[in-house]
Amino acid sequence: MTGADLLVKTLIYNNVKFIFGYPGGAIMPIYDSLFTYKKQIKHILTRHEQGSIHAAQGYARVSGKPGICLSTSGPGSSNIITGLADALIDSTPLLCITGQVSSNLLGTDAFQEIDIIDISIPVTKWNFQITKPDQIFEVISKGLNIATNGRPGPVLIDITKDAQNKEIKPTKKKIKISKKKIKISKKKITINKKELQKVIQTIKKARKPIIIIGQGVKLANAENQFKQFAEKMNIPVASTLLGMGILKTNHHLNYGMLGMHGNYQNNILILKSDLIIAIGLRFDDRVIGNIKNISPKTIIIHIDIDNYEINKRLKSTIYLLGPLKNHLNYLIQTLKTNSTDKWFKWFKWFHLLKKVERKYVKEKEFRKNQLGITMPEVINYINLYKQKNCILVTDVGQHQMSASRYFHFTTLKSQMTSGGLGTMGFALPAAIGAKIGAKRRQVICIVGDGGFQMTLQELGTIMQYEIPIKIIILNNNFLGMVKQWQDLFFNRRFSNTKIYNPNFTKISKAYNIKSKKVFIKEKLKPNIKKMLKYKSAFLIEILVEKEYNTLPMIPSEKSVSKICF
Image 1 (cartoon, rainbow, N blue to C red):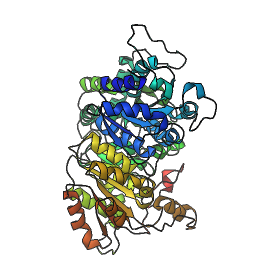
Image 2 (spheres, one colour; image 1 turned 90 degrees about the horizontal axis):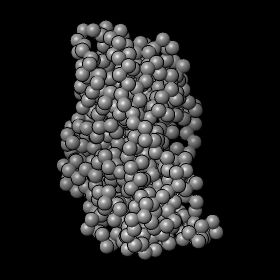
Image 3 (cartoon, helix red, strand yellow; image 1 turned 60 degrees about the horizontal axis):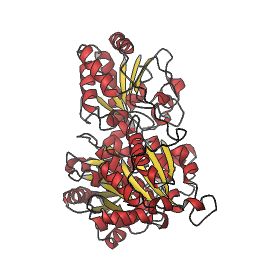
Image 4 (cartoon, helix red, strand yellow; image 1 turned 45 degrees about the vertical axis):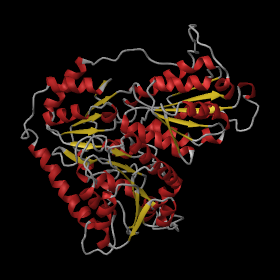
């Protein structure tokens, strides 16, 4: 068989069922082999390489399996760089396979040649270039292993065209690969009982504790263990953006989101707490803001699988490194249940400040006598008619923050967005991948008018494969979040943020996707209900208020005292 056949068989051997990609000259032998094995692996043809890698991200996040992405050399491979960076910072397991010119042409500036290995080093967990077919099985298998083990991330394998075409015979010879290229720690990480006992004693002494949860809990599939731990301790819980959905929205310990656009009570009381338990997060600047605001007397317990994140921004008093489930199970078994009375006064502060936010923010966003439609109103009606197993996929901007704040998360693995990189255009292709990875779950894609136009060509993918996702465009004819910053911090000098948009409903109809435009508040509720009950793909464009700002907001690197209402 050829190297291309071996590659496809290796993917089948590793239980790969779906590939997202776009063909081209340097990857054609692999595509030819996929034709032979099309019953074993289904290929989803996107309309752009960026669409394919975001779709692979969406698939990976909901399925727990690595997303597989194929692209050709040159512009084909460079078009996935944004997706690689997004997957690295948000810890998404991907295996991206790129075609390359024949090995004898490497370094000659051949047609569509690009040094994707050097380009992708900063945005991959590991990369490797295959120039010989007898490297394929081990490299692909190792790449899948690296992508999924430890802290997940993207892996890129570049394969020259001659390695794809060359015939290979079965051999018992052990394949050797340069140790300089592949470095995998074989050190086993076990729980540190001594440090765990310190954690237990620290929690017992605390008077004003708070737990912050991040996506690491989801990646460890430790949602149930965390719920048991939180309920046993009866400690208030705040979440990062990517940690939303770990606890149900209506859980009595869930006080919502923390950070720049987080809930008021969390941002105020984290500065007054005497114990912060951070689980599966990296203390991102949008989450914790100016670290100088944290009292040096506050005890910080950080639990994470990645040693790189420990003490990176905020120095930990105690840290636990390794598999999260193991740590939580030990704590659940060892700690005694706390009564709700232990931190009664502390909880009272949370409830009081929650009322402050309701008065100064939420009451303004849900005014019935207001003519215009606000983003939170849209999310509120979605909550009424969405399915319980629904997956929310958001793009980047004001709608992302509004959706995260007001969406009712009712099941696990129900939230997906571009967190660390903030990639506009992420949502539509990611929603495609999410639906393919979770066919029985409803997928709702919420996107702004700016981000939608960055990847709207993927409507063609939805049309071709009849993918029944629900698309909601919140259209204010502005780049809303940039406009908000201009409004609050640049004296309302709205430089290049107004957008003259096309007719989105007509574009949708051109792709045979049912659509509707809503601009009257009375029409909002029935049309959202109609969309969410519809069996096939449906796009609804909602014209929202132009003068809307997503509040509260803490200015970048500023103190909570500078919060905007």
